[in-house]
Image: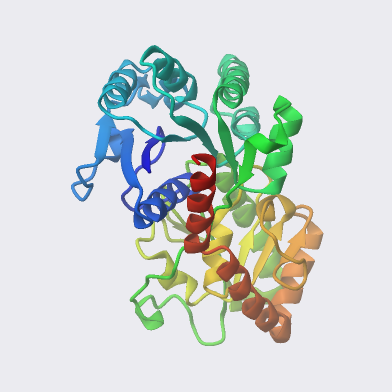
Length: 384
């Protein structure tokens, strides 16, 4: 099957964010199953290791800000997409996010092409952008109003123009149906998955753990506001509360792209870590104190695949099929109860062992291989 995979915020080299990981893994899985993939991504993600089937278009900037949400009006994207459509008869065009779907639909009609246009939704984008802009003080009131309104109508048009929607969870599917009045049969749940541990480093090379000291970890891209908010909660609330109870016998490690390096009495910010799994190898607990965001949080799969016991907010665990108290600990909010449950997990070796064992089983259910096979079979059925 001939497939064009289009993205505005993703590339194929060393994916870092959840959306980038999903794009990379779905493209890889479809390629492994014999599909003829063409990839179209921004020039900013260009890499020397990309194959000949990867094409690029210029990014769109205004005052040094990348205007990814406005790429339906990016002349460079439209020109490149038009050429690919003229030269190829694609069976499927899979688009990561709502941006590009409207312009793709228009170009296909003008060129009399009839591919299946698929909106691969890593989030309900308008819900995510609404949270990001409303809570981020860096944006002016006008920017907040414009981007929230624009994203809503962009996604609304995208859901109407596309032929199919890939949602990452039943929660997101239900949200699409309720928000945009979409027929349920138009939406297929294709979850995001767990990456396999590829670390070759040994624990002692990091020298971050001393004796019986317990390590609590969190990671995420700092430019994604919910992750920044979570790291502030760790620094200003969670770590100080745990310090009062356990002193320096418990240490927090936070890390991720663009994370600033700093150190407090029981918290070390490592900045960007090239080999994430080498740090997770020494972790006793992972916390996911997220208050916002949307879609499936792939950082949880990184913890589960390493057998690291997890305590998360409901928002952090959203979209993942787990049993509270058996596979991980889930609390409503980051408050005193979150601290109490974290203390319980620190003190209870048997509970940590149970969660660790069960988390590995959950990770197996979300392997990218299983997800790739599900998407492959779905596309075969749709094109029959």
